Image (cartoon, rainbow, N blue to C red; front, top):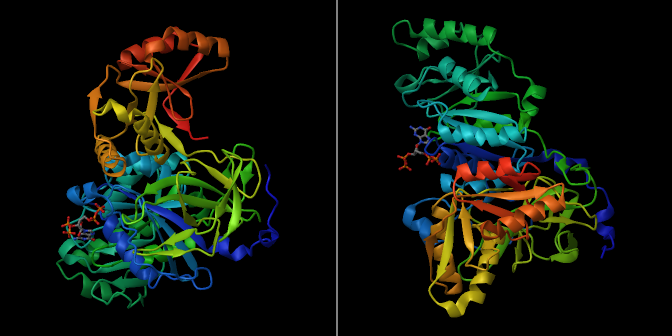
Length: 536
Ligand code: G4P
């Protein structure tokens, strides 16, 4: 059923709200300073009330991910949340990602909802494994990256060496915007390359920058007092100004070049330069690929996709929030949207914005914004909402799990309840659920083992279902498809006991070893075995 367009939303939203939005995530290796930087960025966001756009009806519900015992116990952030703040002329939507590798699926899905990313690097360590992996995910989507080299207040590697490592290991051009004046004990501030301005480390947070005559300025002799230090630094800057790439907006927006800022998140130094950089360079919401066409953010009619479901954020009320990125138009409170998967209408009666500690009802939201939609299981990861158009956004992926376990239910009477609970957990993206064709107990698949603990705890706490896990003989799985239905049927029939269906009913082949998977791939060239599946 196509819904009638709502006259109120037919008016094209002013270009401004879209141009003001900066929707980004921070990627880093654990301990590089993501949490510290997030806090400092939120500080700049100040009161975080969007004038005229949100009626802040604050309730004291914490949106921090402290809702689950397991997180508290282990001191890890399991869930992805979003924080909206305003700075200068821009509205920033910062999408937080779980720090723990076991929840990387969540992180990958979140990265489908951002327009840019800040890559935080520890100045003593350079590019670390997880930074590199997350960077590759950004690259797949051509997400522009701003680099923040953190912890300059501690012993750090040479700036040239760090920049060289970024260029070489990530194959990414770099253009430093600022340059550190000394490091570690001698860290005295940053110099804006080519800009003749200095930000002093010993100045107060908001003191701003001071003008100098260039890197020859005598100020640097006063800042770098150790023997020969100032001369060595001047040589370095001359080389940097003359020999390194200049910032180029187009190359950055295409994801080929990264502007680099140096600072110390802990000491709130360089963070203002970073946020100013994001405001100036980071792209506003971009067009999003849907199955039938590209959807431009300035289109008048609302569209969006769900990339995250979070349950029980408020332990007192069993609620389930779907996080939706608005891709176009204006979402307003009370509007009816079409849930494309079911072709049914859904009423957006209480969409929410999320701040550092609070939620507020969103009266309206624009492309780039992320709103939370409370629901009781209607919405799933990957769902598209529109004002009537039949289109589905692409690119919220599902990854073939790396660990497979069979559920062991201790109380056989609860089999039906377990099926329902697993369906919910699968839709929320907690785990992937595979129902074997031979009628045996469900198999769950995860990328990281901690996901199994989360599932077990939630089934027990929320559904009263005590479960355990059995190992299975399977260790790998792949979605299978084929141009030829006959070929696919042939494959499925001859692998009955190794076949299962995922939540959407898509066929999944489970293999005992990577070797046997390769063997089957060779035997059935007409069958495609894939390890990434777009939610549809
Ligand atoms: P993460 O989210 O990327 O894992 O990193 P997080 O911000 O938690 O920072 C990891 C550690 O590094 C913290 O210390 C934090 O205080 C410190 N840190 C972050 N930025 C800077 C910086 O610019 N300079 C210095 N010197 N340290 C920084 P911790 O001792 O592990 O934790 P805490 O007890 O201080 O919270």
